[in-house]
Every structure is written in C-alpha cells, then in structure tokens.
Image (tube, rainbow, N blue to C red; front, side):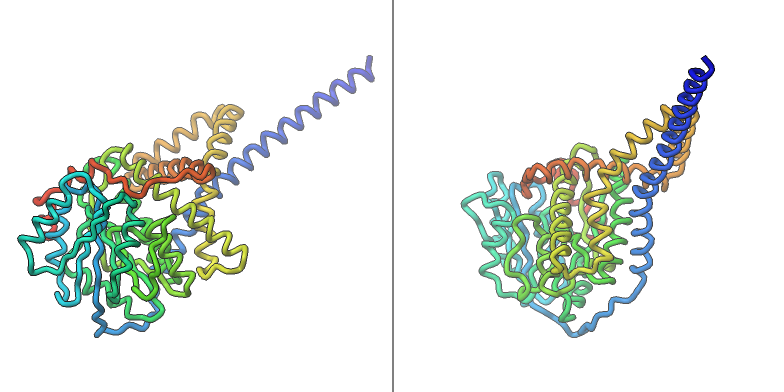
Length: 411
C-alpha cells in the first residue's frame, strides 16, 4: 500500500503543481494582453502628441492664390441645404476665383427646389448645379462632376458641415508647397454638451485629431473627412469609389505627395445625440478605415507603401487587431475573476474608480465603444459587406438651425 500511496501523493502534487502553473500563466497572459490592448494606443498617442509639436518642414508661398471649386454633394438635404449655401456665401476669398458646384444625386425631396430658389435670389455668386437623373451614390456623382472642373483646387464639403469665413485664407496656404497634395480640417461640434454621446465624441475628436496632426507632421494622415477635404486638381484623377475621402488621400500619398490635417482650420457640424445614430455613422467610417489599413499592410508587404511604417504599423494594429484583443481580454478577465475570487471585487472596484474622474471616464467609455464599433466593422470587413456612403443621419439634420449657426457667426 505504501508504494500506491506514494504514487497517489505524487499524482496529487503534480496536479496541484500544474494547477498553480496554469493559474500563474493565466494571470501573466491576462496582464500581457491588457498591457498590449492599452499600451499600443497609449504609446502611439504620446508619440504623436510629441510629433504634433514639431515643425511642418514645408516650403510655402504666402502669395499663393489658386482658383477653387467647392463641391457640395447632396441627396435629400432639404433641411440644411439653404443654410449651407448661406454659409458658403460668407466665406472670404476672391469671388472670381471661386466656383460652388452643387452635386445633386437625384434627390427625391425639395432639395433641388431650394437650390434653384437660392440661385434665382442670389445671382451674384458663381454657383452651378450638377444634377444627376440617376442615383449614382456620393462618389459616383462627384466623379461625374469632376470631369468638367479645371480649377487649381477641388474641395469637398458635406451639406451639414459649416465653415468659418476665413477657412480658405488659412487653409490654401499649405497647398502652395509642391509636396502637399491634399489637406483636411478638424471637426468641431456645434452640440458637444447635449448628451454623454456627444461628450465622448468631442473627447474622441480632440484626441484623435491630435494624433492626425502628429502623423501629418511626420509625413501624412489618411483620416480625411467630408466637412473639408481639399485636393490639388492635378493630383486628383478621381475620388476613390471604395473608401471615399480617406481612400482618395491614400491614393495621393501613393503618388508621393503628402496629405495633412491642419490644426488651425476646422469645420462645424452636429454630432448624433443617441448612440444608435452614432453607431450607424461610425460603423461605416470604421469599415472604410479597416479596408484602407489592410491595403496599407498589403502595400507594405509588397514594398510599395509610401507612408512611413511608424504610422502604418501602429494604425493597422489599432484598427485590425486591437478589437480582437478586446474580446480576448474580456474572456481572460472573466476567467481571472472566476479563478481568483478576490479579483472579482478588485477589478470592478478599479473600473468604478476610473469612472469617477471625468477625463478617465470619457477615456474608458470612448476606448471601449470605439473598439466595439471596430469589432463589428471588422466582421463586416471580413464578410465583405459594403456600406452605402450616402446615408445622412436625419436626427443631426433636425438639430441644425439658423440660430445655432448665427451664434457661431457661420451665417
């Protein structure tokens, strides 16, 4: 019996040792995944924040005064198109060098009627209408209209986005550098304090746009938005039909030109106040960015990527792999809380403490919801589901009013 007891004790000791080994490694892997999930975005933000304080390294001409074509794509924008035209009429720039082109993608509401009425009442402004009889989609319509334009600079501005009067005076200066192919502006919210959804969006804008400025000063950023995206006509064969403004920016980068986000300029818009509408808007944008960063990885693998790896590698990781780490981290956290009962109290306690301070609360909420959005977008990217670009958020249009815009001196 003694030999049998020895083997039983040895077996128990081995099982206990394996159990301890498993528990230790569970804790190590959990901590490692957590550090990776939080560390990559944290380190990249700190690095780009530092880069954003650097110089542009540009050779600019203060006398640069190019001709400009402003494209305003519209599809069922009757709620805002009148305000948009009034806003553009206030922009300060030589009138003989500006043409406003309303690109109507077969609107079925009163958009066209409002445009024609404005053209009749304001004949002084050079406004032309490109009216498509077929519903081509935003990019398809823009590419048709682009064929007729010979201006030095082509600018896209969505109907629900509004410019300060001096935006062209401040912005176009950067395009005078021969190495710059396109520029974009910061997004500024007209309703930042409406709900927790708008508060987190404002925090996201201030954080992410600081990163984009850093990327611009290193070389280029891909993150272009439809509120203000200005391209040199000579660099613009067509707008990217797969990934819209940001895809067009990557095409320009691949032609050895820089694409910059200029911190001194911004456009105003309204953020959705409910999470459902924000999710609907963000999921399409996230899907497009994931397509772009996947394309960058492929170009980098082929040795053809012009953008520096110190931008492409972390951005690709954050958009394509960090959402998966959120799932792994969630499962590991559940396992740790089951195996280590004290952690079931410590982890929720730490999270609650983070929520007390506004800045950490906003950081935590935005980090979690953005990775959830990226995770859903990643599933649609892998299944090759396509989103329609032309899907205005009705709720944001209804919030806009002449009074809100007058308060910001936008009309």
